[in-house]
Length: 362
Ligand SMILES: *Cc1c(COP(=O)(O)O)cnc(C)c1O
Image 1 (cartoon, rainbow, N blue to C red):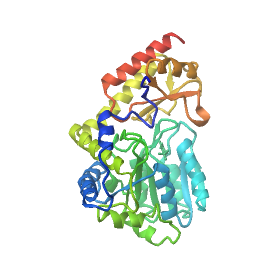
Image 2 (cartoon, rainbow, N blue to C red):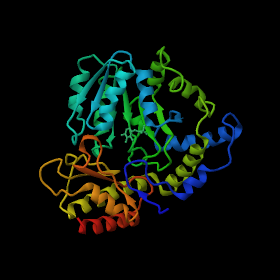
Image 3 (cartoon, helix red, strand yellow):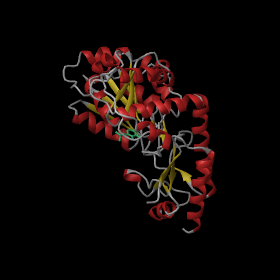
Image 4 (cartoon, helix red, strand yellow):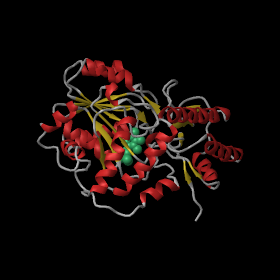
């Protein structure tokens, strides 16, 4: 079986080193071995997220924690800031959790702007908002620091931030941001196998969660806090993932956070340059391009080049790389290339060479 390397925006390629860490002998999740493991990575997670709060590990994909945030923190009405498939979906999920929800819809390709959020919050109707930092379906990165600054004006609103495809690739200082929840799944920029989510809550979020009577058990944020204080998780976690995360955090700090952030930025710039070289424009509004993936415009917007995307994917796959053919309603009219995780200039150049070869045949 030939290996096809993943350059889709999640799951991404997992290194042999990470898999090796994943496959260590099983240990009990209430034993000292697990507590030592979690206690070892806790300060690294806190350093990564620039926080003094305890960082939680959820054995679920990101949606588990996203749904949990609605159950723990929305009492009155939630404002779902929407600008792509994942952020749009959160509106649906809020309603499925029985919450009153309102859509703040920005066009796909545009970011969420602070003025829009402020205007809605000023109505006083909301006690929570959801926002996605890096909308993976459109490759748009919203200016989360500018939006988080609104928290000062609306201190009682819970700011729930999905950083699923940006956490660890972009500097996100949880305490300085002042938001209430920051969450991610590990199959994106962490480059671990899917199945684990990492999140952190503000003291205000934990206090609010404590007053929610219908927050369930599996995603009860108060349980996460109580257990994390003992270096444990509420239920049996995927222990392999925690070993893999420990290995990855060692890699992250060996590289250095600033170097890691700069690497992601550089590689995204290289992909944008590749697209421009072939006459493609980008799908995101200028100035809001993601640094972990590139969403290439393939006719979704006027101007620029368009190609047969399934054919491009096949030609690239024949050379051992998987790229994404666009998500949801922009499937085929965009395509996406991920540079998140362990990629380097050398590995990205191999991908561009395969893409160049494919473009010659289109
Ligand atoms: C991938 C992704 C999700 C969904 O994550 P799951 O791990 O599938 O639950 C949510 N938000 C963003 C921004 C994503 O990229």
